[in-house]
Image (cartoon, rainbow, N blue to C red; front, side, top):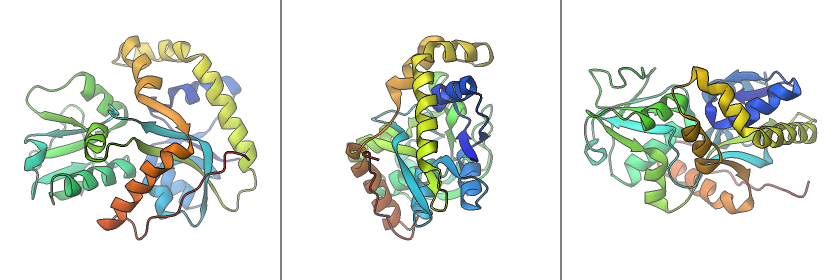
Length: 267
């Protein structure tokens, strides 16, 4: 099985579980894994939620697992020279690492603020997050989490998860696990991921302590982030939020059509 894994802190328990089980997945940022699954170089992977919509005719969504947040997400941050309601026609730099976050920000700026900025995708430097030719930048993952806890005083910082919740009143599903339709090991993959996740959650404190020497966070910050902010269970109750995200993405032309999504937890 060719297994993809996003190498962000938001799935640290799973990373720790994989290591304990001796599993060596193919690691990468979301956009890399999206592409690898599309090209058939992965059998099953965690991918951006929007990527599933774009490939839904070729993929099966695994039940049980996702990366979601009910309100603040902490690790998707818009850094801006201007208030968020003043970004119309400004240049906004989008991180090249995540497709879901890019689309989510476009939906929020369009639907909540009636803004049509000039978007450009390029790498974002955490030490100088906004280039001279831009007004705002979108950061995700560990870089965004750092900004969340070390907010620059000369910029406006917005938690994009909070903005989504303010606009919709709903949670947000940022990533899902999916398998190619021609992969016949879905149940084995599901069992393996569950086993690794259970182990990682049972040993979450150990996983966090192992990361602290190389991370600019405290134990308390990561402990609250992992399980308090970020959650990993995907149930039928979360599908309406995902369907709304797809509906709004279709409305502003980010996907051709919103896919019908159902998951069978009885399997």
